[in-house]
Length: 329
Image (cartoon, rainbow, N blue to C red):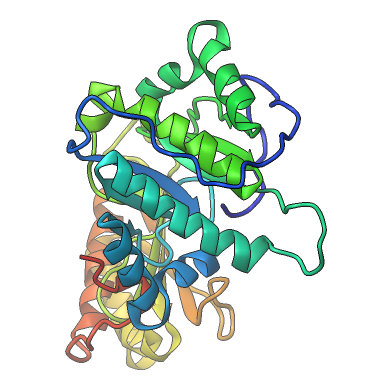
């Protein structure tokens, strides 16, 4: 689900919408229905909050009803190049499919449904698939993806391999259609992926992407997102790195210190240049001030560690009760 795509390469533009069947598609038989598999897809922060529910009630209900495990990346941990979080559902094929149907049904009804008896609303879901597994979905000459499109009535597009983010080994498979078409297409794709031994064995963390991909990582209390950009990555020692930390406005004084003493000390010890955004200049969607660190890789790492220590030493970490950190076992 989430924000519109741009620059996607399509294996086929998709077939015309077909009439939706009154019943939910049944998962196809598998060679080993007890084998654990998984499916990852994107959701906006608002959609993630809806899936979690107040106090985690919705996600607990979905897990109980499907017997699948549902995990979400933390708030501000976004898939590279997007502002969407990662959802991973794991379990047997039937369990994963049941959980995905529950999630999609809620999201479509809550975010896409319109009043009145108009044509059934069309929406989309973006699946995260390893590069090595995309070939199986496409098939020889695009035969497999065309058959999925014809059978489900959904539009299915696969993004080109993105070389912008070094080490990113995943692509986005965007499925667009009515809720019934989404379910049918995802069922077909999930069954195909589950036949791929590499795919089944590649299950890992919900959010395996590192900070250099511009995906924030949370630090101690008071320290928000972290973004890193290597300007000259070919020379690790002399590289000019740019790292931006989000520090809660009420904690910025700990970084600056009386008369600027702390920030000067951090700069002198680390050798990095440190700049703090003006009062009221926050990272979008937060009340965190931007702390920009520039210097060699070593200098930025030292400065970052010292800043995080200043903030974390202010008080003991409070209990973590934010939606993005709710236990989902």
